[in-house]
Length: 175
Image (tube, rainbow, N blue to C red; front, top):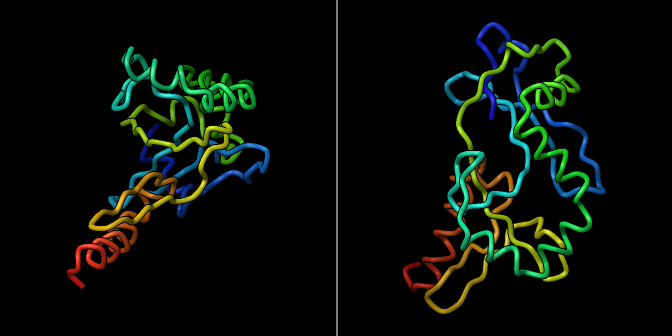
């Protein structure tokens, strides 16, 4: 993510997203006004080489081997390799990232954004290489498993948490 400098934050009053391309499963970079008033830009969707890798160079051989030996990963990579290269490029190049942001907000310049935190979100992937694009919650006796929580999981986390709590109460006989 990048944070927009205070002098340019007035340009973003609400969420700003690009028009989705139905050919791709990712939204692209976007703007979010935060609860405390700041504005963040991002994220881009890049593969993390570590489950909890919050830096660009985080790496786990075990985690990389896990997805590297999964056929679904290679099917997905074969379909989206060109887009993935662009996402990686934007991840390592501030100039490329800002250029993508300028498609939504042309007034934004290179010096108007500064790096901020990173996020890691798990993404379920079918054996066919298709990304699971919706919530996948499986209930069993005395169990509730959240197998996929796509965007806007963080944005709607309180509502989602309440729904999962309701499921758990029912499954645990607490309702």
